[in-house]
Length: 68
Image 1 (cartoon, helix red, strand yellow):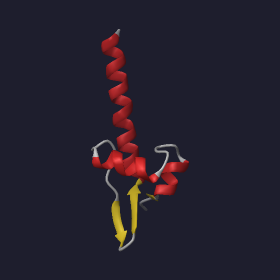
Image 2: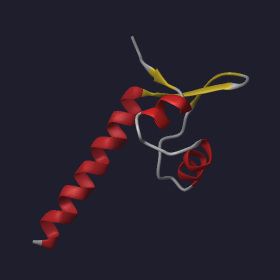
Image 3: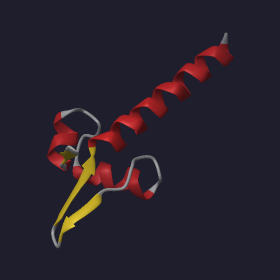
């Protein structure tokens, strides 16, 4: 079963500080886009957030390896 994360979940998990920051990052292509679940309801697939986080870790590791 797929797990969905709400904006509140993302804030609680420390991915963003607030809704405004979240939307700015989405518009800048720095965070995965949400999935519309209804007319006024959006959420993010946990697997999309996990993949985004893994990619960020890989970018960090590559940058550290180049700096050495």
